[in-house]
Amino acid sequence: MSGDPYCWDDRVEAWEEVATSEAFLAIRDRIIELARPQYDDQVVDLGAGTGLLSLALAMRVQELVAVDISERMLDRLDAAATADGVSNVQTLVGDLRRLPLEDESATLVVSNYAFHHLDDAGKELALAEARRILRPGGRLVICDMMFALSLEPRNRRLIAGKVVALLKRGPAGVVRILRNAVRVLAGRWEQPATPATWEEMLAARGFEDVRIELLEHEAAVASARRPMLAPTRVPVR
Image 1: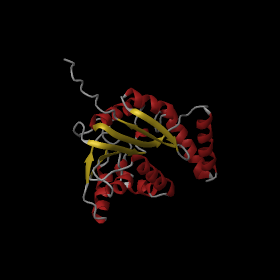
Image 2: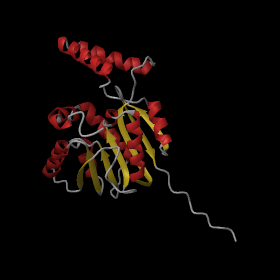
Image 3: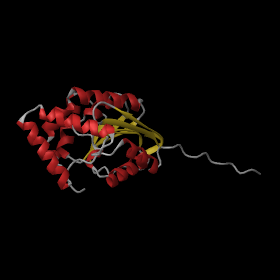
Image 4: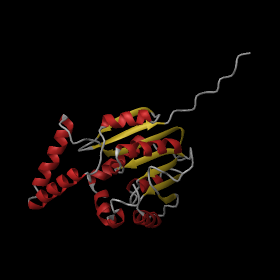
């Protein structure tokens, strides 16, 4: 992925409207509960957007780096941090698959609704980067849409629910359904992974204590931990 293929620079206001919805505020709060932030944590927020999660976490930790591909999103985050008197947030424009951060520089990595914009190979690269920047024992908490376009019962229920909700909006909803269908056929739709795929990817990238918690609608939270270093063995004399 080069540049900003989803044109997030042009969608700042639209995203802020979504991010301040009741559903997203509840998701933010659940991520924070599962992350168990401590004052001495060094946190990295992947796909931070305008700061829904970053600004809430910053009040609880020592330092936070907010990474996003959109410079305008991060400009809005900076402005909100200044307005709130938050001084421990650093913003960084970057690709989640190639983080411009040092090895083992974080104790907690979080993300909210960013990974479904990456294909599975991109997700695995981003997870490998997350593991690289985490210190041994560091925690990872990621919320994302986790389902697939399949006939599996949960997926079928989620898709049917979305279609019904759009149909209730009348002609505008029908147009939205048709546009989404065109995007799927053209390969330009978001690329969420299933909970099972997330478990496999996290295990493959060397994380342990992997857990998936299903939330309302299509959301789920994956949490895991980078293993502690193996203890050094003292040779027997």
